[in-house]
Amino acid sequence: SPSTAPPHTATMDDASAASRAAARASALDRMISSSSPPAETRTALITLSKYIGAVLADPSGSDSRKRTINEDNAAFGRRVASVDGGTDFLLGCGFRRREGGEGRRELFLGDADEDRSALLDARREIVRVGTGRLGMAEGDFPGAPPDKRDVVPPSSFDPYRTSSYNSNFAAHGADPASVKPGEEGSRGGGRGACLPGETDAERKVRHLKEKVVKMEEKAVSGGGAAEGSSSADAGPAAFDRRMCALRPGENPPAPPAGAEGAGGGGGRGDASLLAGRARRMQEEREKKENAGFTTKAMRDMEKLKKAKLYSHAQIRVVFPDGISLSARFRPTERVGAVVEAVRGALSCALPPFELYVAPPRRTLDPTSRLADENLVPAARVYVSWAGGTAPGPGYVRTELFTGNRAAAAVVPVGKEVFG
Image (cartoon, rainbow, N blue to C red; front, side, top):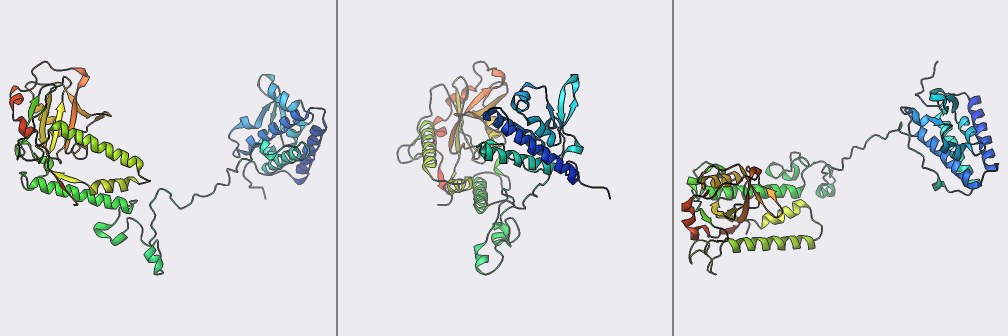
């Protein structure tokens, strides 16, 4: 029956294979015993192994350039043809002479002449002669390319998927991997179950965040928001902004003694509150740098354990000309609420603008919660006019410059969530 062997496999009869093997052996003997300097012979052997390796690296035969050698090429003549037996060795590998374009002389290995097992033998013969008779090392020759036809099937193990090993199950003789993360019953199931691909630490962080959000919403509901409405839906009428405007270089005075958030030290204004927040952030960075290896989930968990519920967030909005607005917002409100408050404080229509924090500069997303943007308990945000078009003088309502500045300086009161 006709052969069904795939392309580029051994199809020659034994006589042809033996004849080519004898031709290669004779060519190698002539190369070793030729008058060429040993260095040139070594170069010829290395070059021949590269030619053969290029063919072996392309078992599909899709790249004919790897099976075509220009005999008129100066590099080929200097490295291979100049050594007696070099070209004959390629003929013993199945290459045939032909005339290429523009009368060029070529050596070409066609499908019918290509025998992969013979090429592998030829490469081994080159290495054996080079190491045995010319003192070369195996590392002098390019490595044997892998057989791309023999593709190892991918492992069922996914290194990017969370795996679970239950030591308690194993101690009692049960399958330690019988409960996978995300499956019903994992770590007790129900509310305590992990989501698909979620680690135990990530699950705890998710639950802590949910608890913090619920406590924030509960605190807002008890502080004036309409029952059943979310904090994001509560408008300015449900919460006193206590907004005031400040001229360049001006700060709100300290709150009066005994006022909300005044504290025993006579109270602190925006500047001291922002300085304290910057100092804490610096301490956290230094602590993180000096700490050992921790995952993001572990760091988030430590941060949430120290979370506080604040009575409000004190936001200072600074315009490019130095004028600023100071106002109170609920921690659960969106950045968009700050944008609307700024628009409400203006005496005329302004060009489009965006809010950002710095350094480093980061544009705030209007749909994000103030707490998620790290604007709680206090923050300084900046206004950037679209296209660089600034409004004329008097764009802030005049009455805001004479507003209740002491009330605007009240420091947010914090309460430990898990204290």
